Length: 319
Ligand code: ADP
Image (cartoon, rainbow, N blue to C red; front, side, top):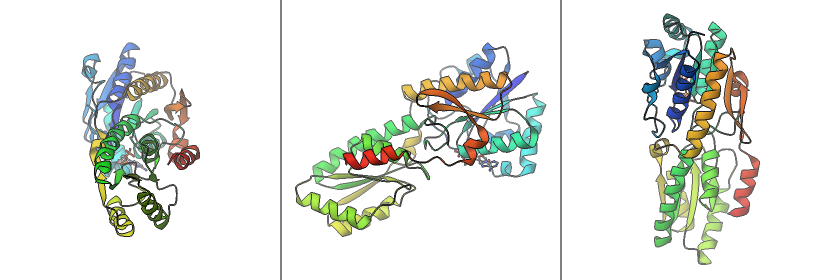
């Protein structure tokens, strides 16, 4: 291989920089040219492609976001758009691509692989931890820690006022972030899209626990489960207890990546580059039970990850 390229795409997540840095430095170490594609598929279509050297990825490992920029592109969803993107890769003699992004971005990579036969290796980059075949995605740990810090602070004020606080967290259709931070944050209720919940029963239990002297309750709500603001109104009406809602929003996406995100992103970044250079294609590198694994790209995008039932059980036991 003469040159490979790396890009970040879709929603940004902390640790994408560490992953891209690992890809760049590994390729250079192996004596292969490496290009950065700016702003995801949008930049690939525009030809926003730049040769990188070792210094291009200096001072990055500690930064959230992505130095390459990211974007969503409607045009890339059309065969014409993808053809333009592929032509730009050819123009730079790029013969392999590492895509760092969520399931949408990986789906885009699968489409390119099928249409043009270009070798593709993916890295799961999303705070949602919703990519099939890997129990780790880049950025989910940092986001979970950011949420946990917010829950800790919300506990203080909830306790002071004897309030119920509902915290809405990200995750799109996945309840992983809510479930993990709900358990780690000691939430009384965790509402996730994967598990049905009984609002009346929850309100009844909340009222009873307040009557028994409980000072406050935290409800962690996954954005895919229900609208937290609407939920807060109903809970206050049904329980008669002062209820506040905190929608954490985009702060969950940012911040300096945790040790876990820096280490794992670096490990799979190296593996992705080495795999591509040795002729591997259509793989996504992730982790299973603490070990790096290579998942088939098509399996990764065609299967839906489910929420670990052990976590659901644990949440019930500990609430
Ligand atoms: P994420 O990668 O975070 O899941 P998106 O779902 O928005 O984010 O996907 C990012 C981009 O990947 C989209 O804007 C689009 O350009 C491309 N993409 C998503 N799904 C497909 C698909 N089925 N075919 C081709 N490209 C796709």
